[in-house]
Amino acid sequence: MSEALMDHATRTIEVGSKSFAAAARLFAPGTRRSVLMLYAWCRHCDDVVDGQELGFNVREAAPHDAPAALAQLEAQTRRAYAGEAMQDPAFAAFQEVALRHRIDPRFAFDHLAGFAMDVEGARYETIEDTLRYCYHVAGVVGLMMASIMGAHDPRVLDRACDLGLAFQLTNIARDIVEDAKVQRCYLPAQWLREAGIPPEELADPRHRAQLAKVAARLVDYAEPYYDSARAGIAALPLRSAWAIASARNVYRQIGIEVKRRGPRAWDRRAGTSKAMKLWLLAKGAGSALSSRLATQPARPAALWQRPGGAEGVPHGAHAAVA
Image 1 (tube, rainbow, N blue to C red):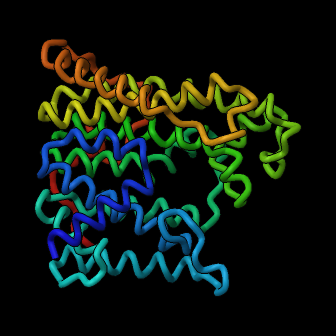
Image 2 (cartoon, helix red, strand yellow):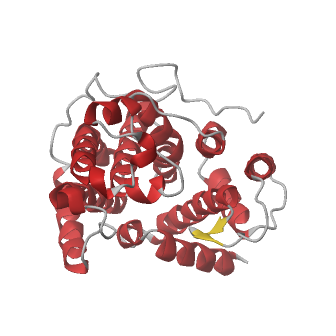
């Protein structure tokens, strides 16, 4: 069963995220196992809510009840934390990771709340609204990943959350047109009004020049969060620091590529070449080593603060499962 879970998790990340899969190979074996299993659970939950499998539609012939699917995921998550036997491979993997690494249940349920925002058709008026969504679907994944790496200090968790926020802002910029085709938009409505782009016309090629400016603005907005995350890698074990620094470099490069392409950013999916990935992984090794020697700056007060973060309510105790 143990090897089957690992095989399932490995296949999931290789299909679901080539960018993160490259960096994940750098973790120590035990950490890598847990990271991949957590990723498999996150991917599974996303697919169950959307009626997909590894991001591809598989249930077009039958109506999909997203609210019911989400409620089932919440119930399964409660059972996993309660120690009940899990038949689903993704939940068996999650249970192993969550209990072994003392992942705060609040993080898992906050993640599911992000899928609820999609199910309920949440709208994003301001960048703060967008960041709130980013927290639920990615920032909280950073919190769970950090827990796997042994980081439970709220100040370190804030940096991990910042990396998740930066990743998701990059993803939103890269996927604007793809998301628009399935009637989803995570861009602040204020920004779209300022750019003169009607939300219902996001995918219209006539707006590419203005859309490129909005995407560039979002990429630039992610930069302070990438900077904050870089300051957090010093608190991680060396191999974990290498993996996270490399993942940071790869995702940040995707944003740079989106910005570089301008109006042609969505002609094909933005990514990084194999040669570029190798360079960014080597650069990540240098960042991991140098972080041991550098004095890390305080986290800027202007950055969006996660619920219960180091500047808010103490977050050391594990939340109770409702």
